[in-house]
Image 1 (cartoon, helix red, strand yellow):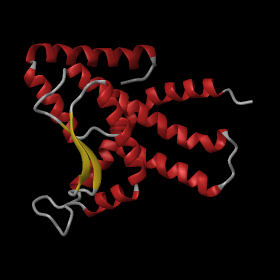
Image 2 (cartoon, rainbow, N blue to C red):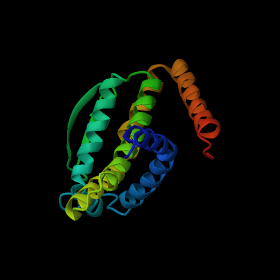
Image 3 (cartoon, rainbow, N blue to C red):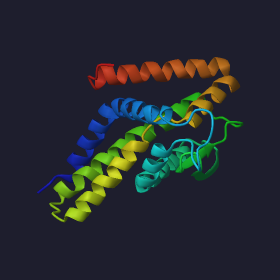
Length: 198
C-alpha cells in the first residue's frame, strides 16, 4: 500500500529543492518568448502572438497558478487591485496594489511560497496517475497538461518586481534589512540544509 503521507512530504521536499531552478528556467523561456514579439507597436490584438497562444493553450494551468497566487496574497495580506484578463498577452493575471505595498518580507514570502506550492501541485498532478494506478490515457494526459500549464506560469512577473520596489521605497531602511535577511536565509536554507549548490 502506498504511504500517501510520505509521498506528500517527499514531493514537498523535492519541490522546495527545485523551485529556484524552475523559476530560472521558466523565466528564461518566457523572456525569450517575450523578446521575440513586437517591441514598439501592437500587431493585431496582441503584442506577442506566440506567448498569447501559449497562454490560451495553458489556460487551466494559469487558473490554478492564479488561484495559488491569490491564496498566498490573502495569507500574507497583500492588497489586490483586481484579478482579470490581460489583453496584451491573453492571460489571466493578478493586479497588485503598488500604492499600498506591504513589508518586503511579506512580498518575498508570498512569492517564495507561491513558487514552491506551484511546483508541488505540478509534480503532484504528474504523479497522481502512477500513484493511483490510473491507466486511462485521457486522464493521464489531462493531469500532465494542467501540470505543464502551472509550471509555464511559475515565474516572477513585472508586477511582483514593482511591488518589491514600492515596498523598498516605502520603508527604505527596514525594507533593505528585510531583503538581506530573506536572501541570507534562503542561501542558508538551500546551501546548508537542502544541499543545493546556489
